[in-house]
Amino acid sequence: MDLSTTYLGLALPHPLVSGAGPMADQLDTVRRLEDAGAAAIVMRSLFEEQIMLEEETAFAVTEPHGHSSGEAGSYFPPADAFALGPDEYLEHLRRIKAAVRVPVIGSLNGVTPGGWLRYARLMEDAGADAIELNVYTLATDPTEDARTVEDRTVAMVREVRSGLRIPVAVKLSPFYTSFANFAHRLDDAGPAGLVLFNRFWQPGIDVEELEVRRELHLSDSSELPLRLRWLAILSGDVRASLAVTGGVHTVLDVVQSVMAGAHAVQMVSALLHHGPQHLTTLRHELAQWLEAHEYPSLGAMCGSMSMRSCPDPQAYERANYMLMLQSWKVAGGA
Ligand SMILES: Cc1cc2nc3c(=O)[nH]c(=O)nc-3n(C[C@H](O)[C@H](O)[C@H](O)COP(=O)(O)O)c2cc1C
Image (tube, rainbow, N blue to C red; front, side):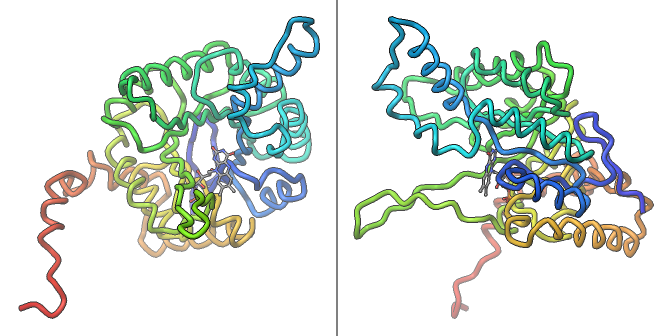
């Protein structure tokens, strides 16, 4: 079965990708991912805060009047809280590239356009096949409107794209006021791909200790439908290729994602839970599923249930929401 796909202009043998996270931290695991058949591997992110902190520290050491802005700096996690510092990150990327043949995608995570974005270029020089720019921001400033937040992100994408030869993907959250409009504005900035959607830890409250609980739970398949809807809405309507991230665990999750329009399917929780071997299982099951349903190739299925292609486009929209609200009855009622 032909499972091939093109994502970020990279010809991949199938869509199953190891997403950004700790899977690529150890060379041994990277080799296991390749052996299990990962189509590409995304490294964990290097954060704007890490880069800024390192540059600030270097400045303080080398300049007699250099000072670290103690107050602002105190909001940053300490440098040793990160798995890889900026230099280590680039070195690790070089080692991964020397160890495996599969495409390796570096990841940058930040919110403001600026000098730190030159690390995209350094990642390219270190051998990255593409860059994933994770632009998650929490818009907590009441004086800043949605357009200002979005403009900043578009400016970041333009800055990273300019001067890079390798493709750039933008990893998004769903928390934008008018997502379709924003996705199109981003698309105009020319990234090779959009990755829908990042997933974040959400704070809980420990009511006994009166503390904010910081826990990162792994996902499950119930998180996928949010992604499916927006993939289906954007599929065929943006120039960028599309990847799904968030809630892909089973072969049916993969099939749905591709039908909605995903060219690549990223997984982190499922691989942390089952190990790299899960990629082999899913690839096998995907081929079987396509054969059983008489698809000639994965490409023939891609986007077949997008809003443009599916027989019932309103199903993704408000009309369906109104219908669904009528569908529940109270237990024990007439
Ligand atoms: C332990 C862990 C670490 C992660 N680190 C990163 C990261 O460094 N950069 C990033 O963009 N996403 C990171 N993510 C988010 C994942 O790439 C992914 O988008 C998210 O977990 C949803 O996919 P999943 O349901 O397959 O886990 C991380 C997720 C987990 C669970």
